[in-house]
Length: 148
Image (cartoon, rainbow, N blue to C red):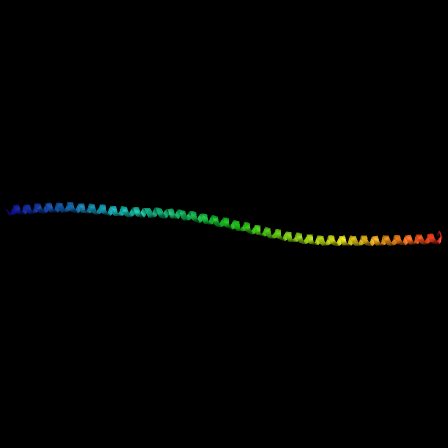
C-alpha cells in the first residue's frame, strides 16, 4: 500500500510535470507569438516612417534643385532688366543729344537766314544807291550839253 501510494504519488507528480511542461511550452509559444506580433506591428510603423522619410528626402532634393534653378533664372532676369534699363537710359541720352543738336541747328539756320537777308538788303540798298547816282549823273550831263 505504501509502495502503491508512492507510485501513485510519483505518477501524479510526473503527470503534473508533463502538464506544467506543456503549459510552459504553450506560454513560451504564446509569448513568442505576442512578441512577434508586437514587433511586426512596430516594424510596419517603422517601415512606413522610413518610406515617408525617403520620400521627403527625394522631395527635398527636388525642391532644392528647383529653388537653385529658380535662383539662376531670377538672376538672369535681373541681368536682362538691368541691361534693358541701361539701354533705355542710353536711348534717353541719345534723344536729349538729338534735341540739343536740333536746337543748335535751328539757331544756326536762323542766324544764316538773318545774315542772308541782311546781306541781300545791303546789296539791294547799294544797287539802288548806285542806280540813283548813275541816273542823276546822266541827267546832269544831259542838261548841261557837255558830251564829255
